[in-house]
Length: 182
Image (cartoon, rainbow, N blue to C red; front, side, top):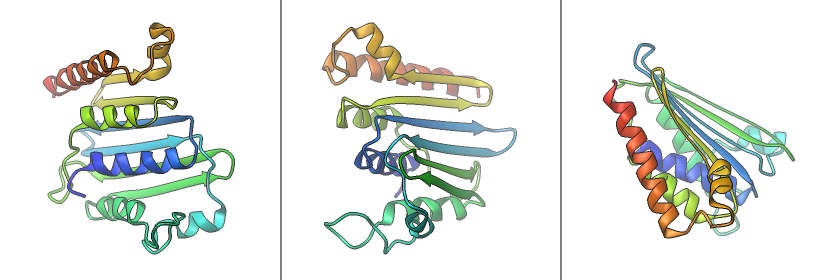
């Protein structure tokens, strides 16, 4: 995948398939430490210890429609290619946590990509799921918590086009503000 946001989208789709009702997406960019961390945590079904040990193998998948599962293995390879580390933990009935660490300025690190559209696609893909999106650049942080947005909306669905337009603007403005202070 050419952008890290596509890996995020893929992992979130796995979380949705695992019946998660709450998914955290945390991106932490630190120029001083030359690091970029992407963490995705869900409260889905989780994985058995046996599956967890094999999940980074591209020839292991829980899908019935094909016999390969490249998403997690490609994400892991993207980390390792950039002097990074990939860690996954999971417990049946509790969920899964993935942490991908990258050397931020490594020549082979893929660009982050379009997080505005990625978050909009994620939110629109299943309106019933709540998301916490945090994006830190150095000491500044953008936070979008759909649980808080729902409180304000009082029953208006998150996938309402006016709400989606607001979410787009909120994330876009927030990321512009974060990047302005770099």
